[in-house]
Amino acid sequence: MQNIWSKNTVQLLDTTSRPYTGEVLVPFSLDEAYARLCANDPAMPPLVHLWRHERAMVLGSRDAKLPHAVEAIRELQMRGYETAVRQSGGAAVPLAPGVVNLSLVMPAGAVDLNPEPFFVQMVELIRAALGTDGERMHSGEVAGAYCPGSYDLAIDGLKFCGIAQRRLTRAVAVQAFVNVEGSGREYGEQVSSFYRVAAQGTTVHNYPQVQPERMASLAELGVSGGVSGFAARIREGLNANKESAIAVMDSCPPWLEAEAGNALDALKVRNLLVGS
Image (tube, rainbow, N blue to C red):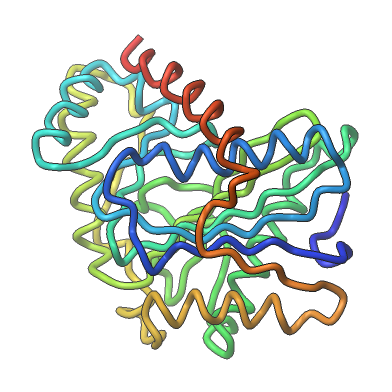
């Protein structure tokens, strides 16, 4: 597979200074659009995308098929949440100003079918951003956490990050949520509340059995710097690699906007299928 650091240039799109407040599919459409460009042109440089949203709940495809998903989503919207079903795997994740979303989008060879190396690149990117605190970080599924997976990231047994992956024929988008600030327990309670409504009537536990106390934020785990510090350390980590030059953007460039608009339309159509 292609290692991100073997490219001459890495694109960094960092909009964390201005959290999104509207349609939560917009930042996902940027990842989708860039992945499509990578699929058509293997010379495209990798993209590292950092963003936040003010108040949203992003669901996995299985969440959207729960018996009362439509009612649960309607309840979230009445409480002021933006909602969406993402293309990548995983399950329900709440977004808030203290949650940083981190994506790594790059070309991938048609024969690079093993997802693990791409997950590992994301894990190591986050570990480097944590500096000495990265030595305390462990990967592996955290029982009771929301959006559980083999590449959960935890400190002292408490999950602060989950990672999912979206694969195209010749491109890959690895997407992570990082609870940097706020209360992990409160984030967990938001997800647990969604499942209480969405999973009513089901006798099969085919959704995460969330224990809110299994979640934490980096701030709660003693990692200083907050959102701005985490974003700065991602940038510093990229700049520290002498093999790559970093092209920094703080807004979507015009050359990506049209493709992102097309991707957004497709994502909206997919979200019309919620509950079916």
